[in-house]
Structures are given as structure tokens and as C-alpha cells.
Image 1 (cartoon, rainbow, N blue to C red):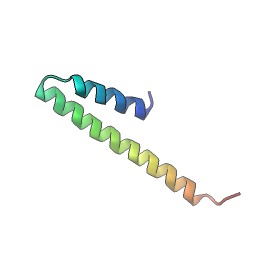
Image 2 (cartoon, rainbow, N blue to C red):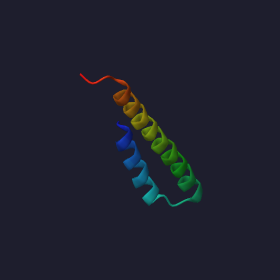
Image 3 (cartoon, rainbow, N blue to C red):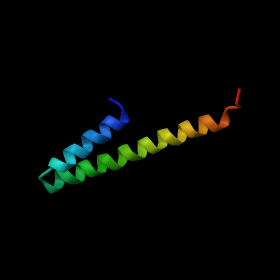
Image 4 (cartoon, rainbow, N blue to C red):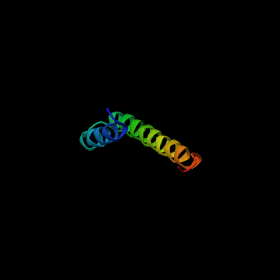
Length: 54
């Protein structure tokens, strides 16, 4: 599963979450997944900008 799919799945679960504990857990997971995606994007940007053009 890609990180984007995981994020969308968490968002869907959050929309349907009923219990406060469940919502908190999903929100925490969503924050971590978004941070992971940002790190992946930053890494890709760093790799793209550090490589010399051909």
C-alpha cells in the first residue's frame, strides 16, 4: 500500500470514527503518515537537486 493510499484510508476511518479514543488514535496515525509523506517528498527533492544535470 502506498503512503497516499494509507493516508486516504485513515481519513475515511476518521470520518466514520465514533468513539473519542478511536478518533484520537486515527488522528495520531494520520499525523505520522503525513509526516512520513513529507519526509519522502523532501528526500526526493534533495536527491533531485543534488544530482548534476545530464
